Image (cartoon, rainbow, N blue to C red; front, side):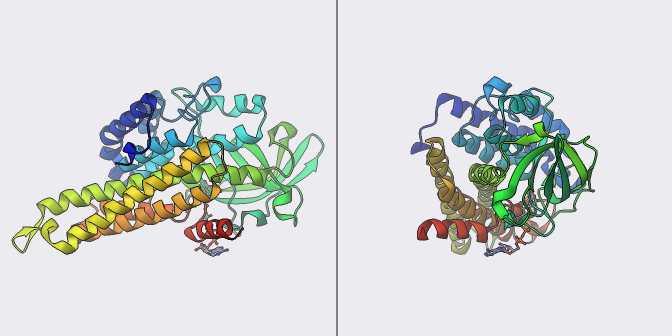
Length: 384
Ligand SMILES: Cc1cc2nc3c(=O)[nH]c(=O)nc-3n(C[C@H](O)[C@H](O)[C@H](O)COP(=O)(O)OP(=O)(O)OC[C@H]3O[C@@H](n4cnc5c(N)ncnc54)[C@H](O)[C@@H]3O)c2cc1C
């Protein structure tokens, strides 16, 4: 419905339709098995998506990508893919999270070195490492250090929860060159998996979104040459925040797709399941719950699309991105809970997808800034 208010270009309609079909035919059928197996990333679907350009549509055309760099197109794609499965959908577009700081802070040569290999049909995978065991929401407090030495830097510290750590070849790692100065010293570096001094821990066992592996990075006297630094010393925090401003819109779209999946599933179930002699959808308590789900899905999408349009127009959309991410992720949580409730006992069964979706939805309220942190950003905007 929201599409009536926001004009989509023919290319945007085309990629939206392609993603819808891909989600239905390729993602949905394997989604529960990937979750159950919880061992490896689903490479087949990754390469299938790559062949269609879905892993690189957001990268610049000059680097082999699809050149659809705007947030709005990314939101369209993300909603559709994550309707199929949010873990797999988030994996397919995850190179956008790595490439953003490289493109924003790095030189043309660095972009060619680390972004170009992300395009094409056999793309390399990149990851982003900011969080540490003792530092999450307060990213400026990070303690991983980058000490200047002749010809480069020595990195020491530990990063946690890094998505795609292990399978990824490239890592944007944030470290401070001036401990104790908070954001002022934070600097971004690209590490390659083979770098000596970089070790990757085993996958962390997770509640949901198991199509992506998460692990810790250990940096023990890890030397990187000067050409690994992105931007100037101290520019990393700004790069990280700008990456989040953009990725939160995408994450809001992912949550909207997940919420829409739950809504559609619950509607279909409620129309056919009968209790007290009629479909449960005819019981007002059930029907009203479905209505609440539908309203929230529409509202979430509108917030996501508004933030995307503002960002694409070149304006600061940090607050709008926070609103979109906050509302859409809480909507995903509500709608997946409501879908489980609508299916009753079957909602609790692993034979139906809704319990998985509820587990998947929880992550949307945590990563890239918890709901509390989004409220902090929004309230700071109000009080500024
Ligand atoms: C599956 C998964 C994937 C992830 N992927 C990545 C990745 O690829 N790269 C990466 O760098 N990180 C990643 N993360 C880390 C994620 O971004 C952090 O978990 C998140 O930012 C929260 O940090 P924390 O876990 O340390 O929680 P904490 O910061 O310790 O927060 C704990 C609780 O305190 C609350 N809180 C903290 N500060 C405040 C405040 N000022 N006001 C109110 N409440 C507050 C939080 O909202 C939360 O409820 C991932 C996490 C998960 C679970």
